[in-house]
Image 1 (tube, one colour):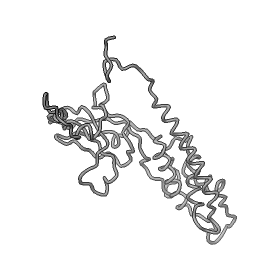
Image 2 (image 1 turned 120 degrees about the horizontal axis):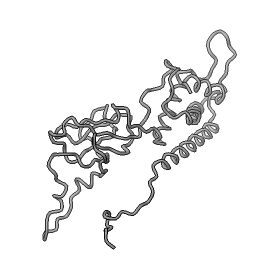
Image 3 (image 1 turned 180 degrees about the horizontal axis):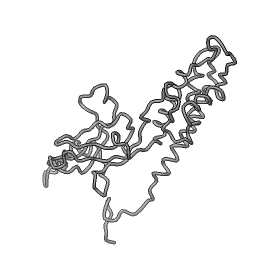
Image 4 (image 1 turned 45 degrees about the horizontal axis):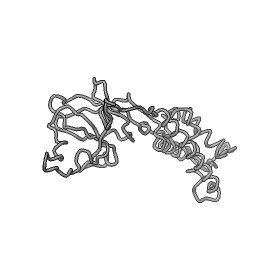
Length: 255
């Protein structure tokens, strides 16, 4: 559905904000700009809470160019989470690790070796990644963004190589009243569902004409139910069957 169709659905069929006036100032309770802003917020909230927008093709979003000695990279502002990452040209994904695995102090065993040295590798081919880092110094454009950290630091051999990501993200293009032909990035099956949040935003205000708090809460609850259903669908798509892990995770190849 186009934004114009969604705006008409929200105004006329959900909010009942109709007007028969053919001249003079509009007597509608909400302007187009206001309702479009609510639809835009509804789309972003649906995407953020359901993680339903998946991307592995948009280059600016899913490609990270390695630089010699650089371990941390601020991802595109739309990225909510990284599903997987791999070096371009490789067959297998990089394993995900965490800050504690790389930087947490490990008490040494004085009889054998200092276990804290196990995670110190010279620069070379990145072997793992984390997304639980924050930059020590960040500007307004990177604040709150996902930071991808690779380990170990890339050597000069890998300078310019790319890491390819699969991500869950927010919509990239904003919906505005100046472009009513735009189509939301959410799958069309969720277009009408997201209007429940736009209706909530419109009706939650304290106004004798436009405000309707009880009805607003009903729309909010309906929206959350739609999000929960979408989230369940996403989880089913990511479900991997349980399998034996012989040769790894404490299992042996021998009986």
